[in-house]
Amino acid sequence: MRSLSPEPGEVDLAERYAYPPGATWMRANMVASLDGAAQRDGRSGGLGNAADRHLFLLLRGLADVVVVGAGTVRAEGYGPVKRSAGWDGVRDGRTPVPPIAIVSRSLDLDFDAPIFTEAQVPTIVLTTATADPVRLKAARERADVVVAGRDALDFAVAVRELEARGHRRLLCEGGPACLAQIVAAGLLDELCLTLSPTLLGGHALRIVDGPPVPVPPDMTLAHALQDEDFLFLRYVRSR
Ligand SMILES: NC(=O)c1ccc[n+]([C@@H]2O[C@H](COP(=O)([O-])OP(=O)(O)OC[C@H]3O[C@@H](n4cnc5c(N)ncnc54)[C@H](OP(=O)(O)O)[C@@H]3O)[C@@H](O)[C@H]2O)c1
Image (cartoon, rainbow, N blue to C red; front, top):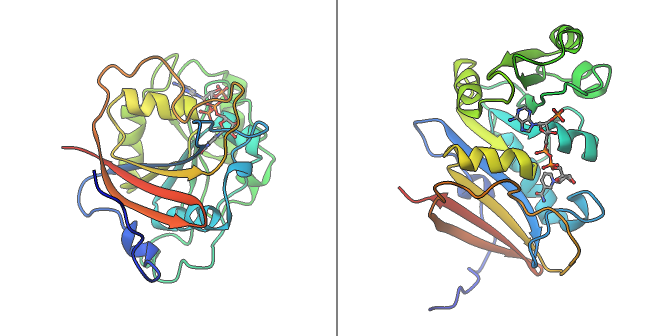
C-alpha cells in the first residue's frame, strides 16, 4: 500500500479527461456518498460540490453525445445541454453542444419541454420497437428517434446507431438502471466517480442498480484528484 499524495498545483482537467483516440469509448460520470448512495432526496445534485459541477459540465463538453435514462431526465428535470465556461477549444470541429440521447421504453416524456424544443442539436430518443405508436409519432416530430430492441433497448445496437451518427465519445450520466445494463453488456470503458464526503444510510440507489453483472469488469485507477474533501476518481476498464 502507498499513500496518494495530492499533486501540487492545478490540474488541466480537459487534458486529464481527454477521450482516448480511436475506437468508440463509453464513459460514465456518477457521484456517490461514502456509503454508496447515488441519490440524496431523490436526486444526485445534493451530493456534489462546485468542482463536481464544473467537471460534470466539462465532461459534457468533451463528449459527442450524452446518454441518460428517462428516470433521470424526469427526476432531475433535464434540459438541453448549453455551452459552458471552460469549453474553449474542446469542441473545435464539432457541433456547439453534444445532443442528449434519452433511453425510454414508455416514452413518458414531455415533448413540449425545452429538452426537445430548445435543443441546439436535436435530442435523440433511444427506444424499443414495442413503444406506444402514438407516443412514438410524437417523439419523431420532436427528436431523432432510434429504435433498438423489441421490448427492451439493446444498448449494443443503440451504441452502434450513435456511432453511425458520428458519435464516438459517449458520456453516460446514468441513472443507475441504465448504467447497470451498460455494464452488464460489457460496454463501459470508463467510470468517473465523484466520492462525496458524507454518509446517508437509508435505501438510496447505488450507482449501478440491476441484477448481478454477469462478467464484472476489472477496473484500473487512472487518476485520483481532490477538491475540498471530495475525491474524483477515474477508472478505466482493464484490457
Ligand atoms: N449519483 C449519480 O451520479 C446519479 C446519476 C444519474 C441519476 N441519479 C439518480 O438516479 C435516479 C434515477 O435513476 P434510475 O435508475 O431510476 O433511472 P434511469 O436509469 O435514469 O432511467 C430508467 C429509465 O430508463 C428507461 N430504460 C432503462 N432501461 C431500458 C431499456 N432496456 N429499454 C428501454 N428503456 C429503458 C426506462 O424509461 P421509461 O420509464 O421511460 O420507459 C426506465 O424507467 C434519480 O434519483 C437520479 O437523481 C444519480
